[in-house]
Image (cartoon, rainbow, N blue to C red; front, top):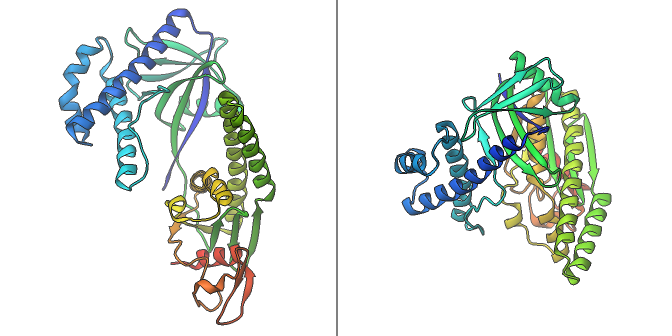
Amino acid sequence: MPAVTKTISVKLHDLTKTKLEALQDLLNISADLSRYYVTKLETLNTQSKKALHNETYTEVKSMFPGLPTGLIQTIRDKSLEAYKSYKARVNKGKKASLPVFKHSVVRFDSRTFTLHKTETCFPYFVSVSTRQKRVMLPVKYGRFQGEILAGLASGVYKFCTAELSFSYRLNCYILNISYKYDVPEQATTAVMGIDLGITNLAVLAVPGQIIKFFNGKRHNQKRDHYAELRRKLGKKKLIKKIKAIGNKEQRYMKDVNHKISRQIVNIAKQCNAVIQLEDLSNIRERAKFSHKMNRKLHNWNFHQLRSFIEYKAIAEGLKVVQVSPKYTSQGCHICGHTEKGNRPNQATFLCKACGYQANADFNASMNIAVAG
């Protein structure tokens, strides 16, 4: 039975000066300690958690007296994750720089975090370890978050981790609480192929049942609008406004990806279909288009859309499979003939062997559906 892991965000509010100082102290320690760990990993030339622990534990305890061992370990683990991600990019020949932990985050586990249900005006509190002592923090949440907190308190959901950060946009401290639960795997009788792209953000095909296009015209126009805004602001050297526009575009893209992924998973559930997606891990490195198309490609988060599809599908008990993207756009799904000449232009597929003609993205989605 597959396990689903999700995260909710809640606000911490009505905090006293002492609690605010304790939380800020934790964030400062996390940033300093994370940079220390990364420096040590570079010096030791290792990615081993055991080697890092043996080399640093005694020194860290003396550097930050009173800091609980549980927090030392979670900060160490998060730093190691960031460093491994950096090294993975370097090993693939990608541009990368050492993590600097500008926006600090503190991770809590079951030793350093406890959820409390109360009968006060704040139904839920969390207690977290700090350098001084454990502190009780009231949380503010919406209806959905309240249902999850109730499930955590009753044992329906299992607590994983919680991460503390400060949101400058909301001007408050935020807790991202991760939890998991088991879902029964659904029996499937069909396969859905999904082709992700720019002109059509996604095209899905369940052979013999359904075809659906998610046209990207309106969204591409929106992104062109944001790009033009950034260009004009760049000429005026208005850096803060450029950043604000970028954040707005990212929120827009995330909302679009959530809506598309939800529709895709709902259709897959109705069709009892396994979802098959291309492995687009290196699409940005492989693709070579015009300057304008490259900008669109690099600005659209395919990984985010794919991850949204995956976790929503798993939450419904549906299986997700990644297939090789090799020749999915050049092969004919009718006769199997594959050659570059089958694509007379970006939008059209015309098989040189059997004469089959169709939308290129639809043909690709059919190839993905039958792959493997």
